[in-house]
Image (cartoon, rainbow, N blue to C red):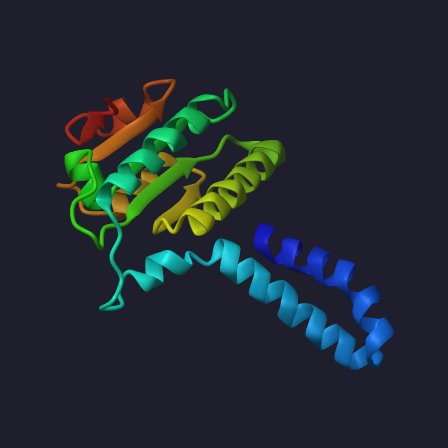
Length: 178
């Protein structure tokens, strides 16, 4: 809903400029396509998809550095209570291989304000990852129980657990951030 709303706002902002240069119907279509393209590029996790291409290579140390900087950003948001890494980085605490990605999951606080702030943060982090060429697989959930849909033998590298809820729910899976 957040991304669709953002696309519509961008399309509405583009419409007056485009309507000046082309018929109104065409301008609407072009505005929607342009807004969707921008949203997909910044939010669509381009580099996560690109890493499946044979020619893709990325120094894993850059992912580690991105994660360290992201952990600082997340820690500076007092309204954000929980954040974890899953996948290979969750298992080891470090990126391995030149085709690794960063699987980050945030748990947003209840209410409209928490939802909005979290989605704005997702947009910021995805844009940073896009510009930096970092394959960031980033999602936010309402409840920590959603983490059960992933392999239960897999560790959760906990970047934030301000209230200890993740440690209580997943005592055998939690690995603290260094």
